[in-house]
Length: 181
Ligand code: ZN
Image (cartoon, rainbow, N blue to C red):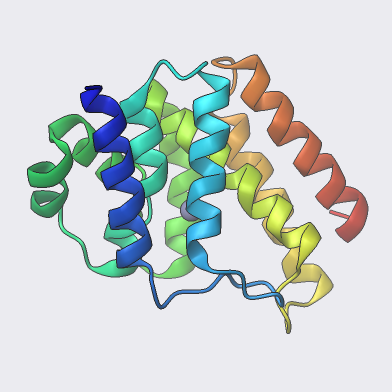
């Protein structure tokens, strides 16, 4: 029995349950879990399936921020490495939104390799989402600002994985062409 495969399936199941009532921001309002599986797939492919902790982190990366899951919950179910990774990529929700965004640009450079890869995959999925289905009510300026900001965060974590960065660059170029950032 592959313990990693069982843990991975558990992470997917747990993420789907925790985010069950959440939808993506885009007009198509896809189930939020589609974002999580997309991030996990990007990470699995970019690392040739060799880093189950990272892929589990991808599935669970928004559980603390969006679903009230705690570090202790994650540690108990998925172990310390996964729980610490999720904490590392979670914003402090006690801070104002602009401050959180500024901190991502400034602090990601100091984070672990896994956290940086997760950030790149997360921004790739978000930019693809914006292009496929922009959120209703977002002005062109807001869309352009998001594209610009995602680029700034990813600039601070480059140089670790060529394949993943290529996926990001592709999504970023498409979003830029579309929204004129
Ligand atoms: Zn995310």
